[in-house]
Length: 218
Image: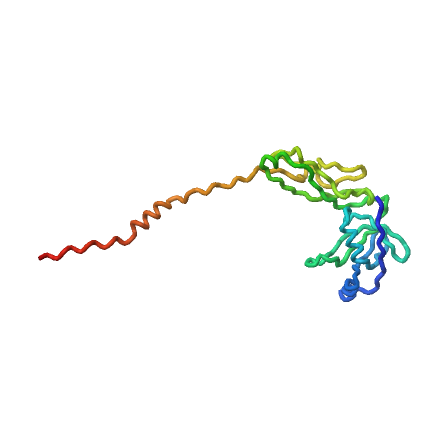
């Protein structure tokens, strides 16, 4: 799968103040490391990096970083965002080789309409991603799992995933990805025991109506 190009500029200043200035210029502070080579602090354009991370491959996109006229293959990791604005704050670029296997997180997408859901069951997805080993160019965008035939009480597991050639999953094969539980029946509200008795007691405890006064004797 073709990689994308991203120009990175070396940066010398460090610290919160310098990082803040870099972000105000529309850049993202970053560091490049890996493959037994020294770490290099850099900055990249926030808009270009954001577009890469928003693509189908997301953080698993194979990136060719252009630094001082030299090209380095890398993958974005440790992506930090502002918790309120969602803007990029910092990112690590890990150097990789096209022929070297690496680890990556890959999303799991459920496909199909489960028969168990049609019968009133409740679909619960327990695992939304798995860890895989693959060469950078072989990392899939996502792994799909067909749940059409799953009945109430049934489940699908990691072992049911269809994995492309050259990709291996590190998760336990028996780990449940999704299951269909029996419908939850709401308990009917039972009448409060003794309600009538309380009402009766209230009536019985009420002050009696005053008796008519007896007429005076003549």
